[in-house]
Image 1 (tube, rainbow, N blue to C red):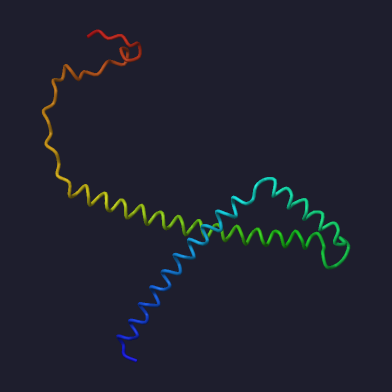
Image 2: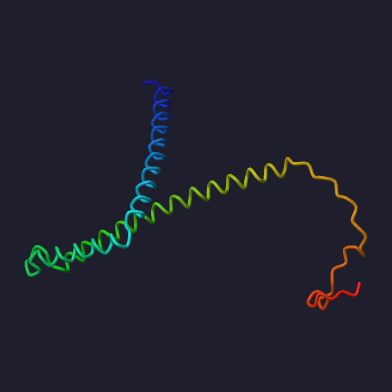
Length: 143
C-alpha cells in the first residue's frame, strides 16, 4: 500500500474517532443529566428502605450476604460513580476553558482591528467638580 493511501486511512480514522468522541460526550452528558434528575429525595428513601429490607431478608447470618460485604459493594460502586463524574466534570471544564480562550482571542482580534474613536474635548473642570467627602455624605453642597 502506498504511503499516501495509508495517510488517507489514518486521517479518516482520526475523523471517525473525533466524531465518536463528540457523540459519546453528548450521550454521557444526557445520561448524567437524566441520572441526576431521576434521583429525587423520595426515590432515594424508597431505594434505601427496599435495600435495607432485602438485606434483612437475605439471611444476615449466611456467608453469602454479610452486611459488611453489602456496605463494601455499595462503597465501591459509589466510588466508581464519583470518579466517573469527576472525570466527566474535568472534561467539561477543559472544554469550557478552551472555548473561553477562543472567545478571548476573537475579542482581542476584534479590539485590534477596530479603529479608535477621536477623543472629544473635555468639559470645563468646574462642571465636573466632584463633591467633597463631607458634602457627599450629607448631600449638602456649597456650590
